[in-house]
Image (cartoon, rainbow, N blue to C red; front, side, top):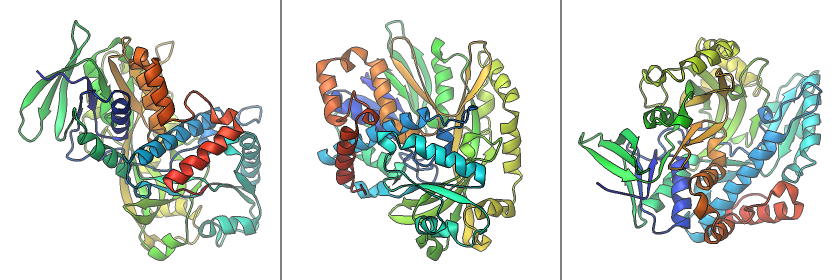
Length: 492
């Protein structure tokens, strides 16, 4: 039986990030990586399956809700923005070290814009701007309700608008677009050539069981040859996107009891007219309609995919029973266990508006989708747009203190008490904050080594702001952004 030091399940951005971090911290570490598909980043990390915004909370209005007293809660926005800056620093380190050869294959400067209309929404956006620009991370954000300025920022969006309606936007020039598929594949290209690292494609994890000595015995099967083998390891990370929940259930750890998943499918309208694509270079996010869930925030999005500028609008959601794009329609049914059936039913009962929203989305015609698009691009023509299927999201359902189910819209790390297993569940803004999430996994699961002088020094080398908050230090924030912008060839 082979005995690697680390097993990573799933060849997405999370496993790629964790694999590189561990290899940098512990060069002699032996790692095995298992992916059930034939290529890395084929599910959630792929550019066509992932929103790819480079979530930094610059334009996502759902990260800054308005409280009952009228003030804006910026807590989540600050946390996400800090985390994204950590990702930028780590990618810069990888570029400087030659692990990533050319940053332009995966990251580009694209302004991030929040756009609203109507007096109430304009008032909200102004308050949001005032609250955020007091903080170091957001100081450069601009606000305008001047039509001429808005036309300069986003001509496609402003052309042919109702002159009697009030509009406003915030503009962040240092926003980015990230192709996480290309980034993930580049990381694995490096990893697979490292001594002690083996990457297995078309390999599925059938069983994983904790042994009395604290190690994990993992049974894997080659989907081509149908041959199975067993592997023993002291640490397993499950970063299999929508497939993580089923593997957590197979692991049967106490900390995983009560977790469920609610799968949601996604779709985009993709512009096929090159002349229109050229007229828009921004990520323009709006407000979700009243009663709609956070993942429904509409945006008209410039993307750079495989070196080509694209224009997408969406997302349009729908109900699915699949947990993965390449999954089974039985995924949801198979995920229901005795320990999570009550939380899952409870979450369903308490999220009737979400169910209603998904039914409405499923019933939409192309005409309905175009109507939504015209809120952001008034001159849109049906013949210029086609519908593309995006990836699957599995929203986390977990028990609350009363044993009922709560539907979560973020990411969740579940680990057993001794840190020998860690599982990543959930969706947005996962990929953009992957480095912070994986550092959290390392701190939980390799606690003694993480706290050692050697690992702390290495963390500081990879993440220059490690242990500090950029938001608390104007000078450091400016310095770090200048450094990462130069290395990653971004606008600063």
